[in-house]
Image (cartoon, rainbow, N blue to C red; front, side, top):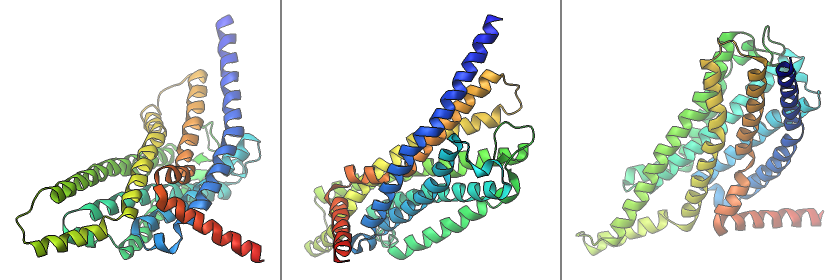
Length: 333
C-alpha cells in the first residue's frame, strides 16, 4: 500500500515538474531566440554579407528559426497555461505541426547546405570552388523549402487535436501516423542531416589542411602559375570566409548535441510502442520528451549568440553597422 502511494506521489511530482517546465522554460527560449534571430536577420542582410552564399544560407536559416520559435515554443508556452487551441481544434493542430515540422527541417538542412558550401569553397578543385555561388545557394534554399513542405503534407490528415486511445493531445490519429511522424523527425530532421554535417565538416577540415600544406610546400610549377594560384586562393580564402567557417563549425556541433536526445527518444518510442508501460514509465517518458523538445528548440534560438561569440569582427561589425543604420532612421523620424 505504501509503495503504491509512493509511486502515485512520484507520478504527481513528475507531472507537476513537466507542467512547470512547459510554463516557464519556453519563455526564455522564445524571447532570447526571437531577439537573437531578428538581430541575425539584420546583420546577415547587410550588403557585404548578403553577397556571400554561406551568409545567405545563414539568413534563410534564421528566418526558418523564427517561424519554428513562433509556432513551436509560443504554442508550447500556452500549453503550460492551459490556453492551447491545438488541444481542441483539429485544423489549428494540423497547421501548427505542418509549419513547425517544415520550418524546423528547413533550418537544419540549410545549415547542412552551408557546410557543403564551405566544403566546395575549400576544395583545391577549381570546378568545385566555382560551384560555391550565390545562385546555387538560392536554388538550394528553394529546393529545400519545396521538399520539406512535401514531406509533411500528410500531417493535414494524420494529426488530430484529441487522438483516440493516446494520452498526448494534438498528435497522430493512428499508430501508423505516429510512426511516420517519429521516423520523419528522427531521420529527416535530425539524423540524416547531422551525419552529413559531420561528413562534409570533416571533409572541409581536410581540404583546409591540404590547402595549407600546398601553400607551405614548394611547387614545381612556374612562378607565373604560382602567382595566379596564390591570387585566386587569396581572393577565395579571405577573412570573411574563414570566420563564417568557424561560425558554421560551432553551430553544427551544438545543433547535433541538442537535437540527438529527442531523435533518440523518438526511435525509442517507435521500438517500444507495443510494450505495456506503467503509469510511472509514461510520466518519466513525458517529462523527458518535453525536456528534449525544448532542448531542440534551443538550437533554433541560439545562432545569434553563437555567431556573436565565434563570428569574429566580421559578424559583429555587420551587426553594429545595421544597428547604427536603424538608429539613424528612428532618430530622423
